[in-house]
Image (cartoon, rainbow, N blue to C red; front, side, top):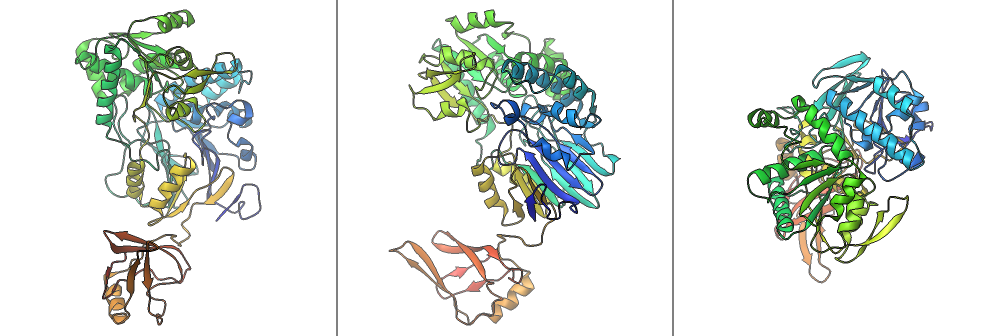
Length: 558
């Protein structure tokens, strides 16, 4: 069942339920509360990129009715971490568990959030509140089971970002797997998500769905074409701007470019890191022992810092930024923010987009309202509104080369479906996605699982109701043979109406309901033959399974 938070519909009695405070039907302001028998577990508290003030926050007021016993921070991206001080303002003794890398990176993200929100005139928290929040962080290693709060939880590597974690939650003999932001692809700066070697059955999976409607191209091919496009621009004397998430993506791009230049695939040119990407890269260099072994080996072999050597330059101040913007030399700039909402990247974009010999390459997710998304939708020469650095927006003509390369740190639909299958849940909740990706992915899942698309502020039970909506009709071989024999004389007529482009099925008048229960069905036709019938809705008495053979067609029901 599902109901609005705060209403009287068994929410007080629920001891195995989910309450999304934000980041359910959107990418941003991620914050999720698990209502468990032993107490409540809060996961993440982020902000909405591009929003200011209260509008940027999840619905943290709902915690008043459901106070958390403790908290887990899955990773240090702004949309998961930047609201933490507001939570600690309400619950000053709350313990926050995370990995060591997440704890170190969270310091930089919170400091930058305080700086930016203060400049915008809507400070989200004070320096004192930030300090108190950092003091509440309790770093723990992956795979360590924590039982201090009645329920238990364990963090597993989720790919996506250095230190990022998925969470396995155990409560009252039941289990939930919370994917967090997850990636099943290894990159130069992070290993792929950990998966159990054999299927590990859980009661529910709460999964992100950022790319739930997308099968991403092969990463190696994307890297190859990305490097090729940069090379074409540099050889023609142009400059390349790569708006990038400062944390994770900027470091990956730096490694890709350094490797390509060292191997001769790219001409040598300055690589400038600006904005928060600069500080994050310095911190990554300091955390080398936590990074993949291949990077550690490279530094030992070369004797040089893997992130801060060669042509990499850290832009020190606004004066140096202006010099780079107005230089005519070929160069690559990697600058935050990745969606052109704010930061240093809009300053370069305003100057370079109007010039056709330059290029702007998008390498990460762009939310629906971001300038980056608008830029990708433009025809060459169209205008995009970019931050002007004074609190307003400026219309900028885009004549430069603009392309998107899929170097995402999120799993695509195939990766997410594979992960969910590895945990064989009774129920799946889809979060962290826009309407299209969530709905598309739900369509692939609801043939096997009970699927829920929770809204922010909605309480959803995590226990499988036993009614699998959308299941393909199936049954045991013995029962199927008995049904086939029973209905051997019940011919099913299948014909194609060419005028209306419809496939029509005529069932015998005398059927007792054991072949097809009452409900709404979807037919799937493959190569001109009916291949399967999918039951969209049914009542509890509807049987699951049968196969029929008619004189006209072979009908296989899965």
